[in-house]
Length: 240
Image (cartoon, rainbow, N blue to C red):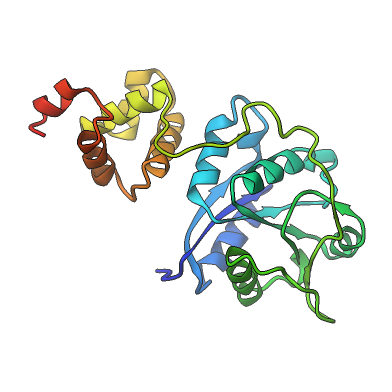
């Protein structure tokens, strides 16, 4: 189990890339927890919940991309990178070797450093995450695979619902999920009660825990009752 202090989120296209990064992060000494997302969570349907959960659950975002310019299939990257950096999250791009050299000398999506996919190691990733979390600018010594972009490309679509997300500010649906959580319902039961899929229920529960800064459902229920985030009648019924 990791004993570090850095919370990391990973967004990568393809199961192989996601599982590979997750395996590396399992060995990283400075990593406390890892949350893995698929790009589709930010490009289809209503991405607001995924964006909020990402921002609230990590210190550093690792983006595995095809190119650093945020073009083609990676057109969504610039907007996500800009909004999470605006909310205090550091961003590391992981690019193919040829793209690292091009991105380091030209425009690149908003980020705090670039890593080479072709030369990435657990140790190198761990050190880059440590430095990034501490606000240390990543340098590019000769022969190294870490780069700092010379110019940052402005995001094309960072406006709209992707803004700042204060903790403790729950939406109506999140408050309802919290009530059901306090009642002891499982993710499947919450989904059935709200007429949504179990996956949506699970993500919403995770978002509520992140907003309340609670590691588990039990502590979230305690916080909800203590701070009056759920109806007083519910608390009395449960003996709070």
